[in-house]
Image (cartoon, rainbow, N blue to C red; front, side, top):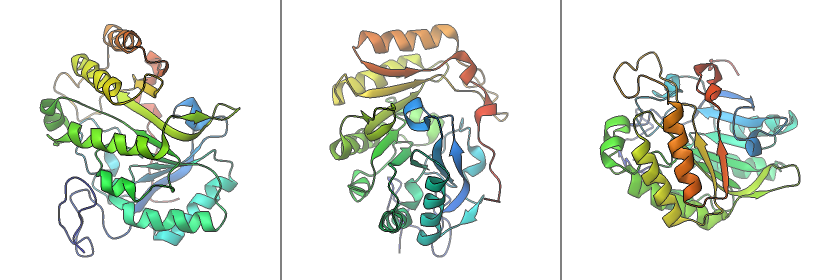
Length: 291
């Protein structure tokens, strides 16, 4: 079957070779564990049940999870083994199941979620994505996903081409986020402050790119209510392979302050912000072959 699940529509038969995303017939899980470094409403006190998949349909030169990009790291799992992992994470106390970079593996993930729910999985499902998604593929998750967590990276086609090899990133991501919002609406928190359903839009502020951050915030304001939950991330840190400006340095205080001020000026009411200390590669999870 030729793959057209994501906007790349690479048309590769993944039974014979990897797609452009690095994905094969079965997803590879590089890490499945409690994760404490998401937004407070996702990680809570006991951690998010994060399942990190290998492979990605973007080619971000600054990716902190770059070890996963080629799709080869981790253990291949079919739908039933994935369902087992979800249930194990719930039994370990996870507040939710956090699917990190699920886009290349949507067909198997739908079956895994259905199986896990039939077997008693009761915690929310978080779909943690780069937002470069086909809206019609996302529509097939309606009723299966509780919380969508897209990272809206760019409006500029110049930046999205330069940094992620996806010139069409913004119009595709805009349509995807609108589909996410159609499915789950505004973010809802329970009495413990944990996300139970809804949309939380992330944006990673990049050094030298605050003007585009302002355009991203404008776009969100045009698409969604000012009560939409946002996460304005300061956590960018250059990986060892990044040597060219502007991505070869961390964000300055002035750059992040400009982004936060503009966000407030637009009237957004629910915004997570980060401290300077968040920009540290030490927060990148350790990925191994063993689960």
